[in-house]
Amino acid sequence: MKKYSRRIRCLLLTLVLTAGLSAPAALATEANPPETTPPSPTVATPKDPVESEILNSMHVEATAAILVDTGTGTILYEQAAHEQRYPASITKVMTALLTLEAVDQGQISFNQVVTLTSDLYQGIGEGGSTADLRVGEQLSVLDLLYCVLLPSANEACNALAQTVSGSVDAFVELMNQRAQELGMEGTHFTNTHGYHDAGHYTTAYDIYLMCREAMQHETFRAITSSRSHDLPATEFHEARTIYDTNALISSWQYGSRYLYEYATGIKTGSTPEAGYCLASAASKDGRDLIAVVLGAENPVQADGTTNRLQFSESSRLLEWGFDHFSMQTLLDSTYFAGTLPVSLSRETDRVGAQASGTLEALLPNDLNPADFQFTPEFTAESLEAPVEKGQVVGKVTVSNGDVVYGSLELVAVASVERSELLYRMAQIQDFFSQLWVRVVLLVLLAIILVLVLRWLLFGRRRRYSARRKTGY
Image 1 (cartoon, rainbow, N blue to C red):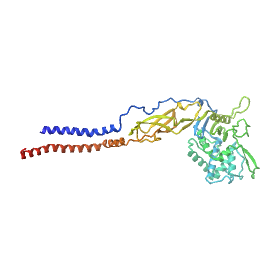
Image 2 (tube, rainbow, N blue to C red):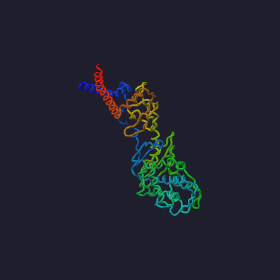
Image 3 (spheres, rainbow, N blue to C red):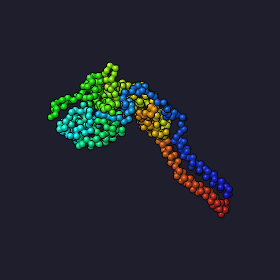
């Protein structure tokens, strides 16, 4: 009898354990029927970077240079652009910028009349550029700005500095503070005008940042694109005309030789230590460029004429940027990244993913975006229905070597409805797959097993005893 009961207990226990552990697996099989082996999402095949012959075709005859498309912020050309150089009178762009910002903030006004003080020539030695302004002379803030940016008057810079900050020294501190705010990490100013000082330096890239900010101001653009300006009569001067020193815009000094029809500014600068410098801007066919050329020379040519390279190299660089670069589409919705597995649906077991939107970049004309690297990344290895058309499922990134152009989202190309039956079965599967549920289930089944065995064993004895008493 004992041997028989032990066999019954072992058999029932085996059945119960088998049922308890295999039920979730059975449900899982029904909720996620076996799939064929469909194609996996597109895997990016590494590509070697492609190079542009156009980029290798340009060299600027200067110690440093940079060319930037301001609309996109794309650096088209750079040559020692982050190496420190002396800026000379290009410094005056910062002086003008701070003055314009003071006007915007209501601290001063363009019509405000400034009386020039005895600090007018602070930090200015012999040979500095000037508008022959005198102590005690009175001019408006706007006229002083023209003096700063056209004939490059050093003394006008000090006059504006005192007007904005109360003193030249306080204004120089403000110049350095603003430079840091603009990200000009390689820059330090010691004066308002750029007269040579060993501690007064910047970089071609920093000058671009400064000029880009200044060109946001309509008044700055109007002044730096002007050929001349009429100053009113004062106690010290009759009414007179001042002229722009930028030969890309004005023929005042060198005739029409260096005029560039698309030029819109910006500022000249030269000292024996800095060489000949020019920050220039131009607009053509809806594009805006800023070029910076530092440390150019003015060589005398065989015919006895002087080639002023700060102008000829700047216009050549600008025209090269306009001619050899164009906006190209890198990526759009035609890019298909493959398909992703989808569960809990009877309609389909996969859904396609494509790029959403358009990604463009300014590229050399000899580069084909199709040769770039396209790298898709998915948010998950599979999806659960329901899936909505346009649902974001990842992103795709475009790069060429170390240059990353950007990314677009990957979205589902179609909607996939959820099967309620498969969904409920998956919920049951998830419920039974939890460890605590399995433990409780096994405990309950064990209790039931004990009760059944108890009934079988003790019930048999009671029935046997009952038959003996009744005689059956």
